[in-house]
Image (cartoon, rainbow, N blue to C red):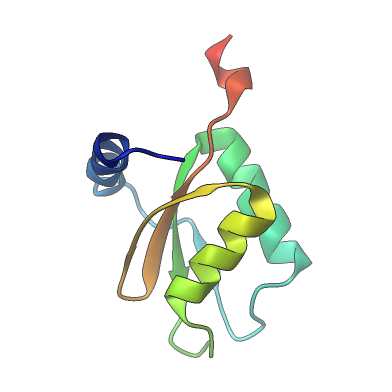
Length: 92
């Protein structure tokens, strides 16, 4: 669970990154979850866009992704959301 200052710091870092994953009309399937999991392992902090042609709600999608991949939600703004998952392998 992230504390307020940690979440605020991560939001600041997320301002400078581009969205690397887009969720479209096919929704949140296993292929998208695998892609998000790999991106979290490589980067720890990622931004995801829910496209307008998708019928998914960005807030609910963020919660589903975080629950499935044991990640932490950082922020949801409009149709984009930022998630974080610590990777202990990067510390070595």
